[in-house]
Length: 85
Image 1 (cartoon, helix red, strand yellow):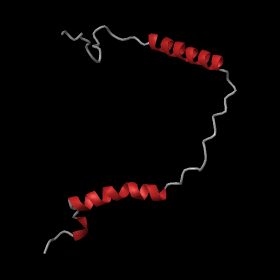
Image 2 (image 1 turned 120 degrees about the vertical axis):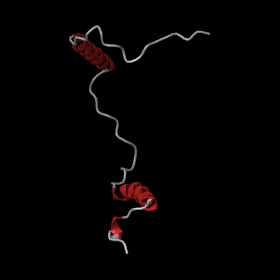
Image 3 (image 1 turned 180 degrees about the horizontal axis):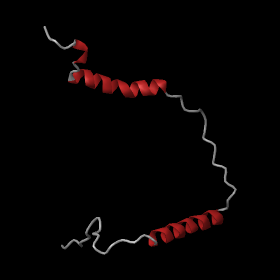
Image 4 (image 1 turned 90 degrees about the vertical axis):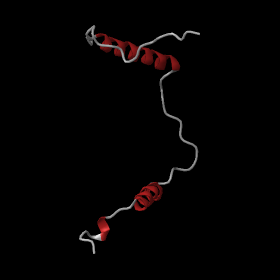
């Protein structure tokens, strides 16, 4: 007889059954989606205001990035090379 209890032995089949049952359990325990068409987002901003806000956000991000100092010896994440026919 084995000195280890039988409940500690998990075979590959048991692991597969456990992993396969997890999504099914998640579907059963989750709330059902609401019925009907989703409500449109409420926004009082005009398209021009949204475009101005987007541009302002881009400029603010650009300003923050320009304040970061990067040493010259830092290599880029990739090296671009044109394909030759």
